[in-house]
Image (tube, rainbow, N blue to C red; front, side, top):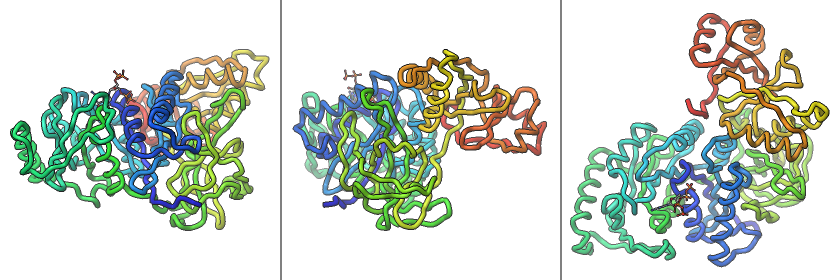
Length: 522
Ligand code: G4P
């Protein structure tokens, strides 16, 4: 029987150490995990599996298992799509955000908004994804709550609209004031956060004397916030103008159920997405999905290749024959999987908002659409402005064939962007990345998977602008710029720095030089 309960599909965006793994475990504990080799395990097992997923990612330092954790809460199916959580960025991190309907921005109360959180937030803003903010680690000393609201407003330009307000400053966490009901949600410290819901709700009149003073502070600040129009407004939230805020301690399990409730009550459900020609498929129409991530080499014994797709419309049934929009060819979905860490399980049915992995789908690339019925093609998953460039060549020239094959494969998977020019020839393409760790992934996979060691030589470029064929000819021979072509056909003009790019643009006013969506450090 297909499970057609309503969906919520979201990702957590945060800086390393803000508590994403802890929160994910806590969420899974509160809810009922349903995609774990098809079974629901006991609490102990569940924790182990979730941790394992994170541990592998940390150990390898690269995103090897990004997939979706699926669980049921209050008769809803929740898909938590993992964003790789290492200290460097890759384009994968950004692409994952094209598969979600909302994001939870996890902020460490002591650190405020950190660089990676900001970068990821910008991608959400670019894609119009509504963001819920969770201030974590309130059980430890940190910044003031009002101060944090200012930082958020200043840095991301969204108006924070707290739904809960802390009772007690950071490090003296007594609970929260639920700003919608006026209740005190009292927090009970538990050993290691083991208890499911260490919260007790009470009316303002029932607040203990011991909490009276901090409670009155919270009430006062809550009123100040209301005067400042910092109250939740669902329309403005969905329009990306405000961000609801809540305070939590993921480690102590406090606020986790509140977050799940918020996701159900406020976060958007999967909705229709227009195709490139403007046609729209409603979620209840025929099946369609787009690929947002392709991954291989997860299992060294079997050269598997998984294409992760997010279902946009219609019900999926395993075995269904779908059409691959890019080639117009039919594609059999005999092997569709839900992937959770190392665990994979056959998916029999899936619904809009769900993530499925197609096994050994050699033809599928990032951004591709698959559908049933009338043709539809979803817009490409955006690529971001690369800021790191390497000229690559085969470390062992006798293995050039393997080198070519490997580069082509990694290009298709979107591990790096591959740029070519007549000048450099096919032997030495330029690899372009958003984060330098993408090169490490390339090096590792070229050596171990394709048996072709790779030689890199760093190029002194930091800025790329989009140009066209006319621009490529006009800029040929101009000092301080090199134009190459990406495998999707886009011409990219590379510059050593922003100033050089501006200078060349000024000197060549007729040449198209467009900025690309910024992903990296700029
Ligand atoms: P990440 O996935 O975002 O990188 O963060 P992770 O969950 O691994 O958490 C980073 C550290 O912060 C961990 O401590 C974790 O226990 C702690 N932490 C997470 N949430 C909270 C919270 O709400 N309150 C407090 N006080 N700490 C929190 P660690 O010492 O690095 O690791 P561990 O030895 O505790 O596992």
